[in-house]
Length: 390
Ligand SMILES: [Zn+2]
Image (cartoon, rainbow, N blue to C red):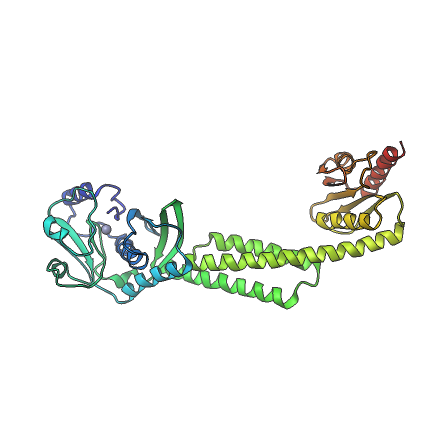
């Protein structure tokens, strides 16, 4: 029953304090009434959608949001989140009256649908019910399912003042207990608007993927980066949680398609590079050259493809990455080339360039930095010549 911001206490302690406060009967500050009433509706909606096994494990309201912990087997599905939100908002738009009445504890216990916990309640106890007068519930003459709780907190007079409720977060805190964060009123409107904007952004990214299928490597990489940025925004912006889950799924699918497109383009570019290098050098033993690319993956793939076509060559390629100023390095050597393992070669060159490298005896890659790539090239070739001629 910890609904009120002051109410971190048990219901008994809370009600005791309440009864001793000078403003009893009035509305102390009253600022959180809207979220407190919304908390009751949320509790009711969760039970309605997920069943009676839902039990409140704690709640807290602050000026800008409400938090609600409850027992549930796993995280809620998109459809369950939507149903809970709809259930609350139906009661909000019906602008139901919030009734409250102090009644003898014994009578309160007889109210259908009211859950009493192992707590010592004050007597008389305050009953808060939405849409149905407490007296009607006491007569037991109604079968209407409604929100009814023992509570001392501050409440709205009518549910319409909540305006709107949006669940902006739901996750399992520990196995079997979920935490919901929800916003109401203008915050809720803003969350819906933000969700709409992000949804449109995902639509437009998806349309671009099918439209262009990425003619160039650069545009494909830019696209992948945009997906990453949008994913971060979707993860962190307060939007409806059901929508976040949907958008995250779509973005992950887009990310996969985009990665596949990038890999295809890399392979195609590497094939062209390998062809050009072999035309320039032939299948000579020591093939060391530069490549015009910003991608270490393209350097590596080109080295692989050259080696596949010239299996007896020691191949190393360096590239100057424009945006970082780094030198990218990859190499591959013939199998059983004990004179110069690829990892030694790459490490020597990258260390010479103030960086580092790693790999196996056959293939390796790394990075360094140099403003003079021609010097680096000469150094790499000379190092390999000494090793292989020994
Ligand atoms: Zn309450």
